[in-house]
Length: 184
Image 1: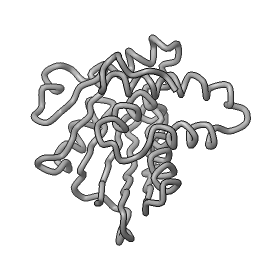
Image 2 (image 1 turned 90 degrees about the horizontal axis):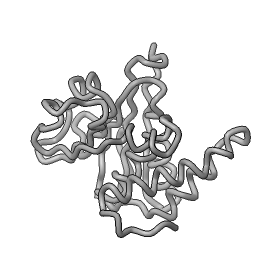
Image 3 (image 1 turned 45 degrees about the vertical axis):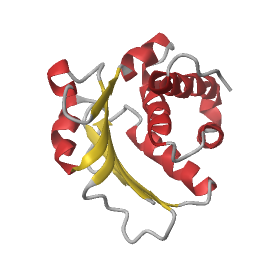
């Protein structure tokens, strides 16, 4: 098994954190993993992306040329990275920020990630809603491990955000699996 992921959006949308949580959780579950952030000249509002590879065997390179999964949080990122998704790859799009004309792309799954984050009271947790969707779509990493990593990587001054991040993860899981999923 080898899963190659590209996560892209605007600076400030938590793109790097989303990728880091996937990589850390996979590592905690004994998988090989790489996380390749692209910091470049990105600033809040500019384009940001990272690449994550998760495998059951050693990984030769952290670079993802063709992604098995593409998670895009805004329109410019969809335009830039869509060509790098494998033909039968999974595309998760933030339908809150990507118009219906773009959302209807073959193979995409549109979710109102930003709208759900706003409903939870913090627009900045849209990345965690996306993570919940991804966890349910791929079932590559356990929910419990994801929750533990989110709590563990929160800096001391942001520990108060763990609760809303957990709620956002749960909401993403519910978006993909349906409302019958119960909280942990």
